[in-house]
Image 1: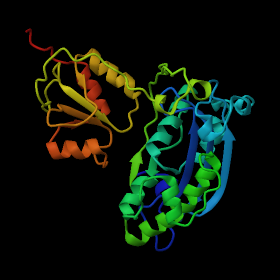
Image 2 (image 1 turned 60 degrees about the vertical axis):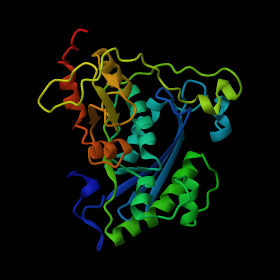
Image 3 (image 1 turned 90 degrees about the horizontal axis):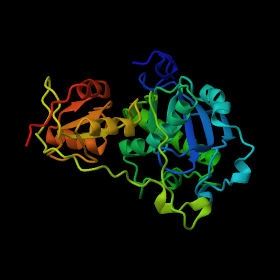
Length: 328
């Protein structure tokens, strides 16, 4: 249980005591979707315990690189040239996030982009929990045709004025979140809160861009090319058994936030002779997740298949002593 504003005892009358006491509704626009992409604008609407707006804030951010899909966010290199760098706005951003639950539409993406920017600036965002409005709409059983922000906005009669503009998207989400929060409180719905872990290690591995078409060499299909890894040279010895060592050839899957950049964790697993799997099957040896109670597809399938689960710290310890595969 958090001992700060997010779970203070002074809940509004008739409000679930376990609900947070403040929210920061966030939207960030970025140069793309890959791990080395950068934030180019950010907006925060601060809300009280009932979802009422307290204030809002918006800033451009100079990404020191190509701005990416200008046809989506409308922010050109000329517009961003005089904008502050992320380290210049990190303190103000932190003040807007402090002691509040971060709320975003597809919150994993927004949080990971924010966490990477803070890691680059050699500091941490003061965020301990996040709430995804997509997950909340599912918990409420809202009859939405899809999971787009525009569909959530239309359901609650919220008018979008500038889609893909961080300030307007944050405003729209704040206005849609308030009735969602009220419905959850009245129905006794448990909010889908998840822990936010700051990055302790990270890397900006260059992502190749297609050089034809689009602004600055971008094309919509080139935002996040998959990383191709060599095939694991060892046969799968089966599932991991608690209390024993990992064995070379075991199939390892990852789910959710990690304090070490995911690519680094995967690289270490490959270097140890393990097979990094992108999905869960009956052949998966182990799932690594810091949030075993989440409803992600990997966690759900691991539960169905009885796949063993360990957290990131436990996996790090196991990586230190991987049993070699028997000689063929």
